[in-house]
Each structure stands twice: as C-alpha cells, then as structure tokens.
Image 1 (cartoon, helix red, strand yellow):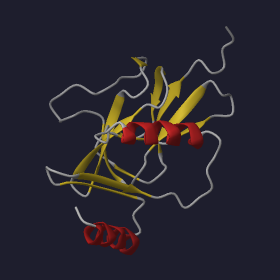
Image 2 (cartoon, rainbow, N blue to C red; image 1 turned 135 degrees about the vertical axis):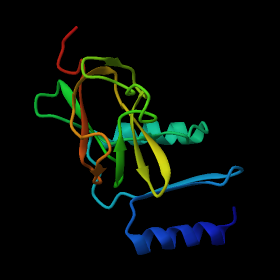
Image 3 (cartoon, rainbow, N blue to C red; image 1 turned 180 degrees about the vertical axis):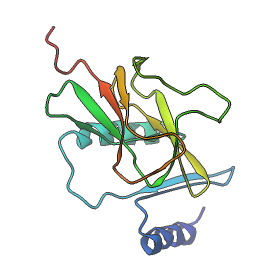
Amino acid sequence: MDTKTIEELIAIMDKAELTALRVDDGETKIELERNHGPLSSTALPLMADRVSALLAGKTESHEAAAVEDADESSILVRSPMVGMFYISPSPDEDPFVKVGQEVLSGQTLAIVEAMKMMNEITTPAPGIVVEVLAANGTQVEYDQPLFRVATAAGETH
C-alpha cells in the first residue's frame, strides 16, 4: 500500500467524520484511528497496550476504550465506533460472554459492525461481566457504554 492510498483513506475519514477506519485487502492490513479529545489517565495505559499489540502485529481485534466508574471497582467498556452491536459471532451461536462470566484481559466481548467490517470489542482488564448495556442487533454510537466489567481495582491484597 503506497502513501497516496493512505492519504486517500485519511481523506475519506475526514469527509465522513470517522474516528476509525480498518482496511484488509488480504495482503495488507491498515488501521487508522484518531482521538480529538484530551487523553485521560485511564486511556494512556490502554493506548500503550494498543501500540504494543500493533507493533507485535496483532491488529486483528479492535480494543474498546474503558473508563473507570466512580467506585473504581468496575469499568465501562465503550464502543470505539458507530455501528451495529452483536453479542455473538452469528445469530445461531452462543454469545461471546454472559452476565456473571469471568473474562480475561483481551477476551472478545462482542462485535461492532461498521462499513461491513466486523470489529471485535475486547475487555481491557480481567474481571466479571456485570451488565450488558446495549441490545443485540442495535445501532451503537461512538463512546457508548456496552459492558460493565467488575474488576479487582477496589480490592486490597
């Protein structure tokens, strides 16, 4: 993929006001993402993990942004883009996760379909799924809370 093609993709992002774009032509994978707001203290570790994963060549999943709640014992996993929210890989399969299920960092929680691309939503931290905040098969917005995951952040060892 040449520089001109990448510039064209950026122009498409600008024109459509997209915050993320992912292209996979079979030989080349490219993921473009932008953040217009200031970085929060919780976003920096996630960004570092994301950059490490990208450098390691792990671009196949799309990690959602997470924001800690006031009680700091759970996180909200938010949608990184506008799209259709799906709780399972297909209508006739079981959901990726269920309420009460323990999840590991990086585990797939759901899929958000955007522009015919399936983007995996993964958990940024280990914990237990406490609540599913979006209905299966519905449109979700950028930064919309999708899951609440209870973490061990509030516990002392």
